[in-house]
Image (cartoon, rainbow, N blue to C red; front, side, top):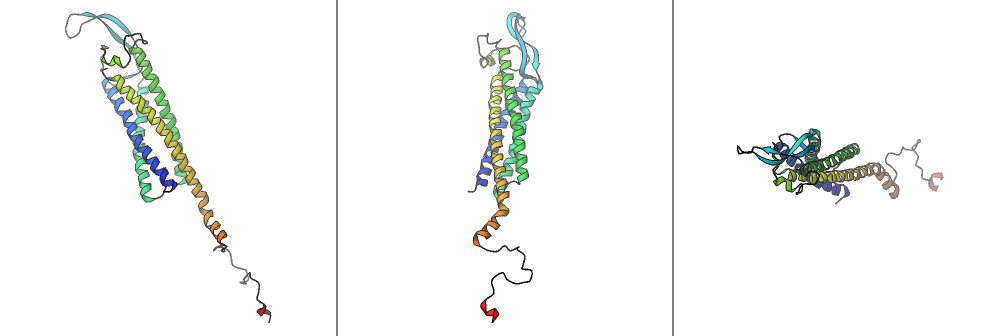
Length: 247
């Protein structure tokens, strides 16, 4: 198996993994957004308050509940969702393209390989920024839910604790943690794409440079004259004349 086919197979496998990882980012964030009625939990600010509440038409009782002062900016959740959606679409398109190249037994042109590398590097920085944003946003939300870790339960356990909000909070930690881990996997895969794109660019450049020189080198080693060499001006050969020509 030649080098370009090995790189194509590796790139195709990386694109397949990117589709799966991107789906594991988009689906949990979509479920969380639906449970929170379109609000973003990342970087939300709130505090705990104890007061008398009437629950299910019963008599009022004193409960401690979470009060949200300000929900997180929607762009924090939308940024991570955008990276996940783009990864899924790009991975599906490029995976099919790699399979097509394997079937046709050819690779990208030099310019196309350069554009692929440039795009991979750009999305690598975007996915890294989205991963950091999602991680910090989840930490901020967990600090709010656990009251700066002073509550008698962890952030994961707070899913089972009634927060008395007007949103569904029974699975927020599972969904956001799944999206966080998957988004970091997407970032690693974009790093892999960048490395493989560089190797394919280097291979295409090597083939482009060595391709025109290979026939000339073969002719030089075999001692054959080049087919495009001009004929002698007077039609005479360069070999010395035989002695019989002077008799």
